[in-house]
Length: 116
Length: 110
Image 1: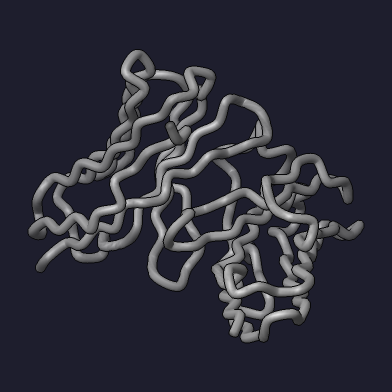
Image 2: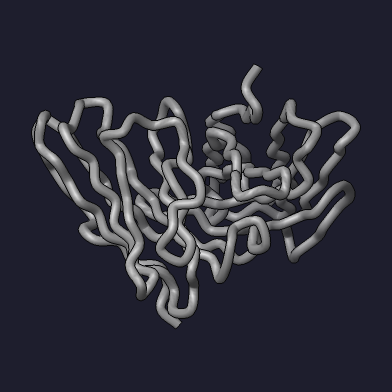
C-alpha cells in the first residue's frame, strides 16, 4: 500500500510569488491535514479537510489556503510569499476524522519550501 | 504557558543506554497521547499511541502518561544508532486538533 505522497519535494521561490503544494493521501483515506514545520515553532497545524470540506483552520493568515478534491487529494496554496514562509510543509492522511484515528494518521515526506 | 513543552536537546547518549524523553502539558483535557519519530528529511512516523493514563510497551519502547502531573515520557531501552532522530510528542483532547511538542533531537553514540 503506497504511503502519503507530496509533490514537489523541494521548491525555491522568491518573495511575492505564490506556490501550490500537492498531497495524495493513502488510498481509502478521506482526511488530510496540513502542517508547517520550522525549527523555531515546530509543527503547527494549518488546516484539515474531510470529504472536500475544511473542518478546521489553524492560526495562519489568509495567504494560506487549501482545498480537497473528490478523490481526497489535497492542495495548499500560499500567496504573496514571505521569507518567514520558508519551512517544511507536511501533510498527513487518516481514514476518517482525526479525532477517531490518532493512531492511524500517516505523514508524507514533506515539501521543503525556501523563499528567497 | 505553552500548551506542550518539550526540551529540544540535543540529547546524546551512548549506544545501549536507556533513553528518557519527556513532555509536559497544561491542558487537562488532553486524553490522547502520541510519540512520533522523525528522521532527517522525512515526515514524522507514529511510534506510540496511548489513551488516558498508564503505560504502554512495544518492543524497546515504553510510553508513560501521568495525567495528575501532566507529564508524559517515552523510554527507549538498548538504544541503537538507528534511534538517532527527532522525537515529537503530540496530544489531543479528543477533538480534531493535535498539538505537537517542538521535538527533542536524540543522538545515539556508537
